[in-house]
Length: 237
Ligand code: DC
Image (tube, rainbow, N blue to C red; front, top):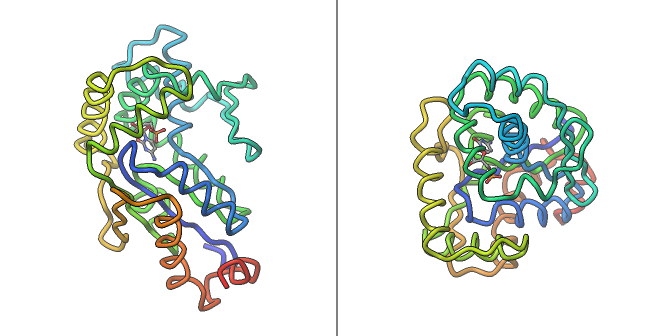
């Protein structure tokens, strides 16, 4: 890993606040925010559109290898084979399919170099399920973001309202539980808190509070200047 660029890995279950906080931290430090879930979602969307059987490991691996997925820093837009799919990948059936597609080792293998390449040239705040454990086991900062399941359901329901998806709390709870269970129990790169990751519980805390906690952690890990680029050290002052 180059001396100059920094990887902040944020892992955790859906609804813990990863995306919002990763974006805030990235803005603060001048890093690029990368939501790796968007990669799995894009592959899942393509598979759904093609009517692919979501247990067909061979075909799904092929799709993951062939998909041209671009994550544009401006506005967090996502392109799949040149098409803007930012809104489409947020639909509930894509969330479910992404979680299923991400079980497949070949899909994960195909997306690994894509994720690593995204942090080659620039410092990143990368969020997902296995960033600190598999994608960047040598990340300078690792955070495991969690929250009480009821709070995660509430946040997820709010998120869905923003993309104009009517949903009742019960169906959101069922979706979230099924996804959590799948993400945590899969054989390949399950959602786990790596031993060297800091657990941050966002339950009952404001975004500002959690942002400050994370920035403190970042400061304690990299502000000695060894790992941080000088611009990062400046932003942390
Ligand atoms: O973070 P998200 O909700 O957008 O992720 C969607 C699904 O993608 C999630 O249920 C599991 C999968 N995923 C993964 O397996 N590994 C990652 N690093 C990110 C997401």
